[in-house]
Length: 203
Image (cartoon, rainbow, N blue to C red; front, side, top):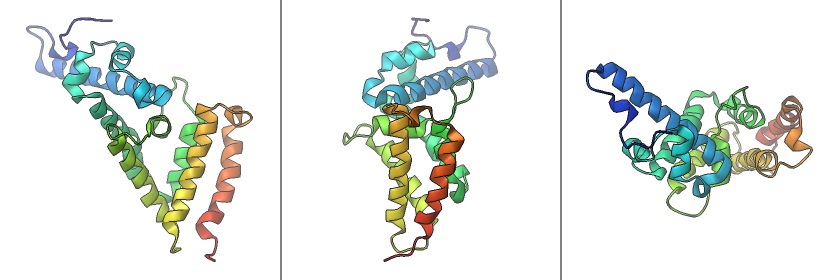
């Protein structure tokens, strides 16, 4: 790892501005990817600035240069993954999309890990609460729109509790048989029952 405090994105004398911008963008991308993974694996408190920088392969001073703080890095990582997915996903597809993201990974282990970050990082502390609270509120709002019932917000929270509970048992606790269950089998069982939650009559 380069221990110097110079930014790979600042380039060298004679380097074209466009090349410096590409280098800076690549450095930011590495920091975001490293932070996303470490927040998902260790939680906000467990992921240190040093650890994020080491995984990204850059000096930790660059994290502060680009994001201001670990809190700023968390906010951007959550916004880029979770909040962008909420904005880009049709409401009726959001729960399934989020569920599948927790059940599957591509060959490189990539994918949206915002709910894992939420699971491991959410606490009553104020430092990291803002971005995670916003993510939870956005999910609740979109999911509540799927029901016409007066208690739609409660139904949305129950759906979120189910989704996050699956995440806890599969990715945090690694409890069998859920931890190694076939994603399609889990989706079939969960999604088949979820429809009842949206349309069950009020008592």
